[in-house]
Length: 159
Length: 200
Image (tube, rainbow over all chains, first blue to last red; front, side):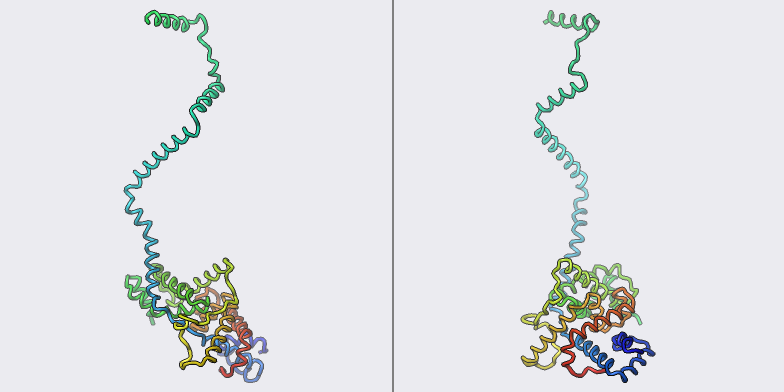
């Protein structure tokens, strides 16, 4: 095997991850090639340098922090259920009451926002648009007109 | 041979809280150290380790004993670490040249020193320099190379186990570790050539 190919496999060789055949051929190569042997030594040293790094000890309050976290996450999960369960009977009446209140509030607000004069003007405008503003009296000589005249005359007399 | 951790997890699934406590006691130090090697900050590492076990607790009902318990546990840990790195990258607060904690104050009390005899001031200084150099070298690795290295070097996991945890092929783990170790060797070369021994 060429040095380049050997070097690509050196880390796996040092980690004991190669098959027996590959392992033997690299082992043999390292006895002959000084450069590859030097490379293998440096890689091996870097492994032990990392492995000798300081290790942390868990703090004494680790378990307490864990249980606190677990309980707080359980409470977060349970909170909506508790609230919903406790007030489920009141939800429908509350919704109806809320709708009514909203209706009243919105209605009164509309009246405040649009004054009654504006409403009247709007009404007149509407009547004009459909032609009811120019509603004529009853045609002269027609039976309804005679009846109305007689009725109003009787009212005057009676009065 | 049945995995005793799996048995503990199944017992916990059936409501035995003490089984969960046993698992926490057994693995908390390893999980904190995996995260610490990845993130490089003690308080954050411990906080994330709390989150790992809190997720184990919450996911217990869904747990299925398909693989080793540690594979599942390390998967949760690595996912959390990688997500954390992504979040930091988004916030643009990540710094590859982040200095490591120098071990002053409270932190120093909590760090288990490798040396078994009282070191001299010169030795302490040298150790600090060495740790800073190694920390910088680890931080310089891309996230997936870094995690593969941590699992293989510190946890002594095989390439196959690392591939299961990272959800990739064994070949991919081999490539990541090759590039990681080559990069580390370059960055630590000044220190490595100074040191002697370490043959195999």
